[in-house]
Length: 325
Image (cartoon, rainbow, N blue to C red; front, side):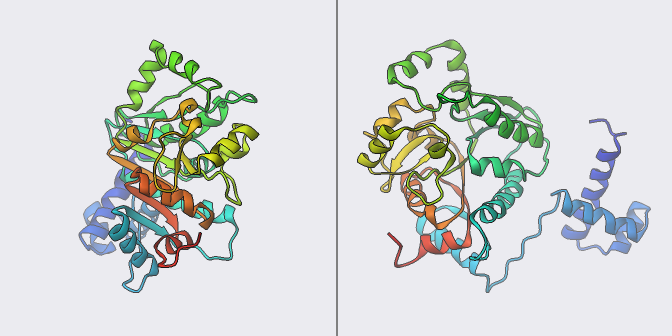
């Protein structure tokens, strides 16, 4: 981006002012003198820094219930949690939006240049993608983690919109994965996985530094996208019930104890296995609503989460000494 770009110049000035103000404790008057501008201009630059996501302000009170929940989750599950305070009275949609907004701001601290970022699709990722804070990187790739096609749609438009927002926010190249979410026959998947074009994408996925995903829940009161978008039929639901499935990550299913072996639908799924996912250095799960509790427990037991963004109600249920069943 050329230095003459007015947006670039404003961003640089806002970043400079923010560093002086928040990190060096200079007053606005002192910053104005250093920058050769007015105090009101410095005030506007600081406001821009906050609004654009250059500065994130977090209130960490020693009496904050969220902080205590984060500590409890870290101690119990060895996962770094970001608890979002949300009133119990709001709707599930508003709850998701608030959690997604926090996740969108946090992700900028996880994604850097020369990284491969795996992105799943679904309602949660769609919400997150709308709240990403622009943080341009260099030589970064955003890759789709699992296919989105079914008998009703290719899923390309749906998944590509999410991927495009991630790519635009981080100045990254986007790699789509144009395959079905679930194959009719495991042999078909195995054959396609041997094709050079597919092997290239699988190789990109294998280099993921960060994976970002929601957690699906097949039997929750508010079902996830994969369970309401025509991806599964009645026989599939019976199979999930028989296999005691509580959730999925990128269309790969697991039980509450974290196991995934022997789950029939996984042989037809297009997402990375849980073993493959565990090899990714940073694995960010974003979850909202207490109906996702069994799914969250299973994902934690499977060891597929390193960073967790969730609402306060779900966090409290997770660490409760009398967990709901």
